[in-house]
Image (cartoon, one colour):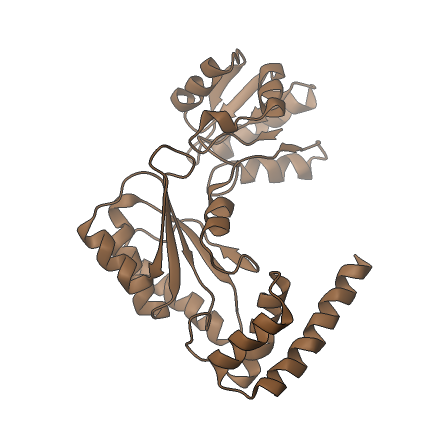
Length: 285
């Protein structure tokens, strides 16, 4: 059982998550010291055992054996939803491949919360984990994503980042993607929660002067969301992203016509076709 845990505020721990961990024979966790604090807070007495990137592959056969014997095994991350930038993928894949049941208790997720608070288009979005720590590899990774955008990718981009790399990463993002609208979400659900919105260059300059602390998620708006221009071939993807995200036809047409410089009547006709297609797709689902 994959069990989501709070990303900062213990008040976000759900009743089902507590009951599941209390009933477990074994709780697998990244760091037993971190999970022990949670266990004490909620009266969880199950045995804790470390499962992290350095031992996951080695431990998979042992855990599959326990599951096959009917033992109740739960997996948690230090915070948030397991597997999302955290260990567990190899175990889940192996369990599913062995025909063992895998289920989850949903709960907090920093990437989704940051996206919701960013004021940027919420869908589609692309979560990319942590960018590479080395500057050269990080810039190369951003260049690859920028190339995908030129080929048609239109999505809000989401990363986690460490505080000591934040300013440099924001500067690299600005160099790769231009002056996009973006947001830095920090210490979500905690006492000093902050969501700072602005252009990438502005945010880079701010965090060069004001060192950030805590857990950080970066959200970067999609290509052409900030008046960078949309080619004729790119307006369809842009309209579909805006309309699929809940924006009205009127608002979407106004935005895309302004971004692309195309005649409003052409954009409106295209928007109606896309809106109709989205409604028909929703009706069939």
